[in-house]
Amino acid sequence: PNVPTRAPTSAPTRTPLPTPDPELTACALQSIVNCNVQNGGGLLDCDNIAPPSRSICLSGAPPRELEFIYRGGSCPGDATFPCQGQANRNQVWITIISSNQNILWNRITPRDTFMDLRGVDESMTVEISTIVNGRVGTRLQFMEISTLCIAQANLRLKEFFGALQLAEFTTVGNDGIASANAAFAKVVVTYAVQLVAGTSIRARIIQATSSSGLVSDQVVETYPLPGELLQPRDTYVFGEQERIIDLTETNGDERFSYSLDVLAISASSPALTCASSESVFFDVS
Picture 1 (cartoon, helix red, strand yellow):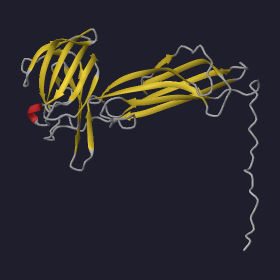
Picture 2: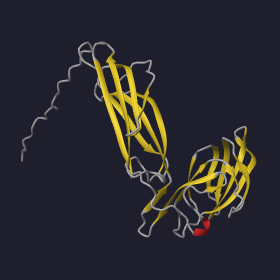
Picture 3: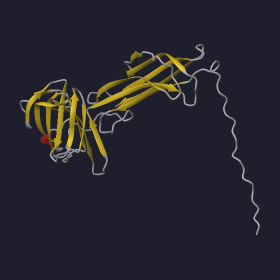
Picture 4: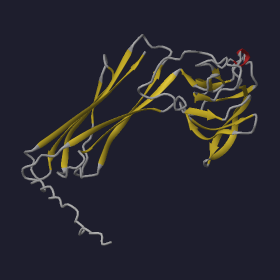
C-alpha cells in the first residue's frame, strides 16, 4: 500500500537578540566570595565548622586520618615516645613513614603548615631535616609516634610531639560514618569579580572593598585596581584572606561574615556605572 509521507519541516528560526548599544547600556558585575576550609580531612567546610566532640582519640584502632602542624620545638624532657633533637627553623624537610612503610609526608614544610596524613597504621617515624639545594640535608629531629587511638598514645588535640602539634583526628564508627575532631579550622576566603553571564559590556573597576572577620569586629580592606578592562569570560581575583580559628576556645555562638563590594564604569560610556555585592556568613557553635 502507498503510505503518504510528509515533507520534512525545517527547524524553527529564532531572531537573534539585539546587540546592546555600549553607549546606552551599563555594565553588569558579579562579585564572588568563595569560602573554603583547607584542613579537617575534607569533612569540614564553611557550612560545617564546629568545636570537636572529643579532645583525645580513644577508638582503640588507627584513625582514618591525622593532621599535625609543624610548629618547631624540642623533644620534651618527659617524652613518653622516642624523640631526639630539636627543629626550630622556619622551613624544614619532613619525612613521615608509617610502620607499614606508607610514605605519609615527604616534602619541604614551612612553619605552621597543616600536614594531612592518610594511610596511618599503628605507628609512624618522623624525621625533620635541614634543606640543602632543595633536598634533604642534616637531620634535626627524629621521633617514633604511636598512632593507635589508645590512652598511652596520648593523641590529644593541641598536644605537642616534638616540633609537631596534633591538630585533628578522624575516626570511623561502627556504622561506617567518619567523624572529624579538629582543634583548628583553616579558613581561606577568595575575593573575585566577573561580568554577569551573557553580558558583553566591558567594565573598568574603580573601587573594590572587602569586610571580613567576626560580625562584631569587621576588618575592611581596599584592593588595588586592575589595570585592564574586565572582559566577558574574565575573572579577576583581588586576593584571599586566611584565618585560623581555634575551635577549642570558642565563646558560644560566633558568627563570621565575609563580603565584597565592587564598583565599575562601563568602558564605552563612563557615565554608566555598575555595582555588585556578595557576602558569605558562617557560624562556629
